Image 1 (tube, rainbow, N blue to C red):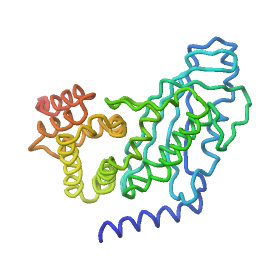
Image 2 (image 1 turned 180 degrees about the vertical axis):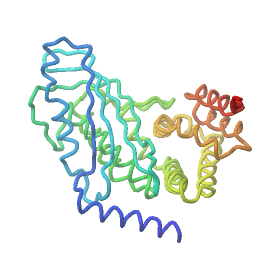
Image 3 (image 1 turned 90 degrees about the vertical axis):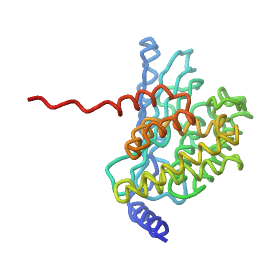
Length: 311
């Protein structure tokens, strides 16, 4: 019942705020052109303006309300061939925590296989057809929306993950670069691998646990810290139990991306478990071996005695 009333408060706040805000994103586009010559750089004079308009001035959903989702799209342009470019893309998004001035990272993606065409003052177009630049933007917008909705309601992001999947299918059919149907066995990130994993019915338990982590964990830290501690501990223990009986946890692209976004935050939550901190970090290392050294350093730092005061 308490969860119902808290969800109702969230929805009421969103409805009231939504009357003043129509669009969903507060997106910032950053651009690194250091690898390009002066002539090629001229073509990007309106790139930031064009992309931010495309992302921020469009209504991506039919029912969004509340504060815009803060996100960044950072392009590192590697090479140019006329109006064709290769690039790396970093995507990040956050959401605020309930009754707090803190935010949590929701999306943190590195896409190293981006190829697209762009010309200065080009009008970017929304639509269902494949376009080398717009389709990548659409895909990550729907992922950002899916993760945000999932954090407030169990499976709430499914419609947006499905839209991201549609973008991926259309792009793959058009032989778009970076849209191959690659699904790895070790959790390595690919666009297709991620969205397939997110929508896999066998992985719904992962998404439900991540909802619990946000809604009953992070969102209660400032008002009900003990309940938050229990929820976060339960999520970690549940993932450990799942990994012990199923290899799906270790090869999940979706979970790998979760830990990529959350590992600094998860390390900070060790303060909630002062009597069992080594075991907490051991569980994190087991679930997220990619960042095991980070967790070990965090544990070492946490166990250091405080500096003595000077006289």
